Length: 260
Image (cartoon, rainbow, N blue to C red; front, side):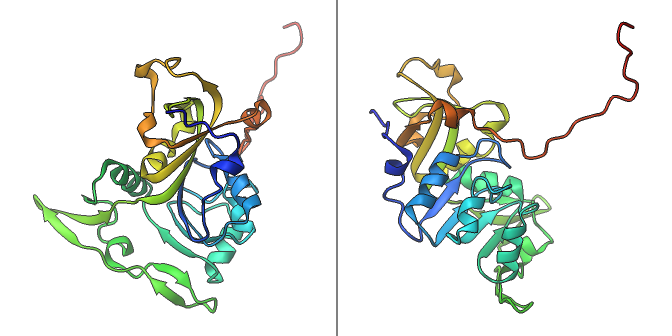
């Protein structure tokens, strides 16, 4: 029952070239940076990544992308990542772009043992009709296009059939976890992490705080340990390394004078 692994490098040691990996995070929030870094050091390549986005500001999955380790991405947002756009348009990687809610449900359904589901999202668009560029040929043309999906009518409303997602591995980050793999996420860092964890056949969680079994109130568990196979405890420095993707401030319009 003790699922703690000594290091991130050991936790990802059996991730082979060409593996499919679901990765939690949204922007820079809740991204399993230590595990991603260990994969980069290991040299694993040809990865099929399922994640909301593919890293930002040279952080998260962007480090694998820049190293040419990713061959296919299933995601819902690619904006703000110039290297991703360059590789995609140059035909260096394949992209399945899908609605964000559909991505979330495809991951959850995979973990719940549901093979497919119907959703209205994407009806009447290339998502359902096919023809969305999955891979470019590098010369302005399309090498691989998405296939058409089944559309079915329910009570007068059309719905498109979406397949669930299961991956070889999943990498997630949690604020707290115990040795049995029960996880608690902190606010917005929860995002896609529980869903990605559910979809992985082998799920590896890096945790900012490792506690003993029983220390987490069962009512406070966001993801039960049955979905987690390995746990890596972060160092205090790793746990504190949390970047801000878009730092914004508001200037005072009428600053008060000192003493007023």
